[in-house]
Length: 184
Image 1 (cartoon, rainbow, N blue to C red):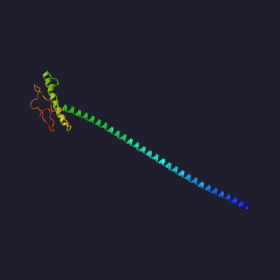
Image 2 (image 1 turned 180 degrees about the horizontal axis):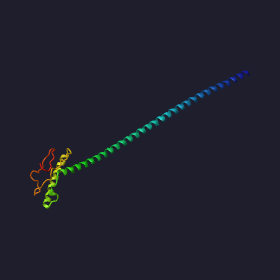
Image 3 (image 1 turned 30 degrees about the vertical axis):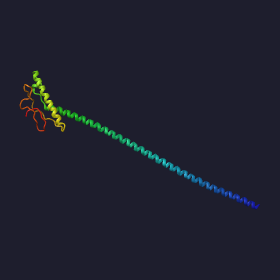
Image 4 (image 1 turned 60 degrees about the vertical axis):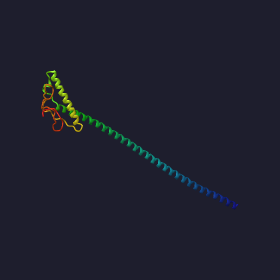
């Protein structure tokens, strides 16, 4: 019986040792699996965070591009509006300069202010029309390359009975190259 006890005790000890080894191995496997799960979880979390940061960065860059494009478009629109305003102002100034140049280019003679007859009125109108045509030609020629304004007329132009300019009042060219009616 002693031998049977020894055998039973040996088998029981073997089973206990095997159980302890099994527990140690199981604990090691569980610990390793838990570490791997934690490591995988951390890696996945880091990857998710990295992807989220990359997505956020892409969104910020996209938003920055949109805002830059909007600023560029607004700047272009503002520049275009400013160019239109400047062109309108230049056109207004040019029209005013042209009106002033016409007033300086042609002065009605006193007899044309209140013409006594239809013939004198017709002659005055003809002289004014010819002067206006000449002014327009000179204005257009001078403003295709520069913006010269005509000097003032020295005195009104007296008319002959036939509506023509008297001798000495033919068109002339002063310094600057623009012809005008007036005394030489």
